[in-house]
Length: 231
Image (cartoon, rainbow, N blue to C red; front, side):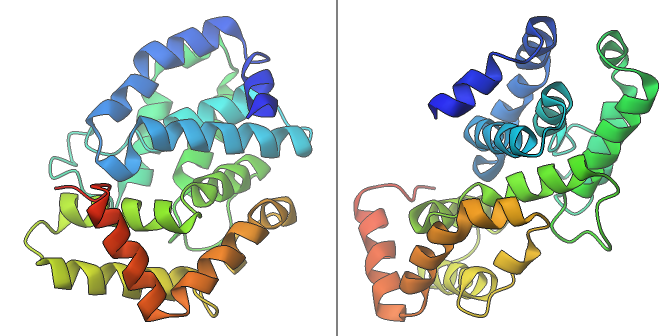
């Protein structure tokens, strides 16, 4: 964390102030799986990767802050659907004229395109190294098994509130096992070898729990008892 805090201090103060006051504040209104805590983790992971790869920290910071702003803040997305939020994030980024005070038109295009390319279901490969950085940073958040369960729980509460507890459990376990289990697609979905090095141990620990239904159920019930899973 100290490493990430030092990197935040390298961001342009004026840019950081504008984004904190006008962009990051939007995440207070998003679902619990895409809240302030999420964008904070994505920013820190993006900066770490950008530093390792010797890329522009201001650009990486801006992309991380803007990547999910299409969630619920676009006229055509009144239902707050996640399906096209990456497209709306790109459009809203392009429409933010204040960014011209900090970046050239060409760099704003790179930032906006990377916001589009962060989506896990993207067809093809991100068009720039910054697209790969944000896509991987977004995946890095929530790889600890408890965080996985809590994020999935919050997502189902927001988008499938009608599910019973048993249905919600089965939905969460099935999704996490498919994505992060021994044969899951999550680890291989990272674009950068640097990202894989960062998440390797977390993935292994999560796979150990996911490989056994009893172990997973025990942890799930523990989180319920601790009131970490709330409606």
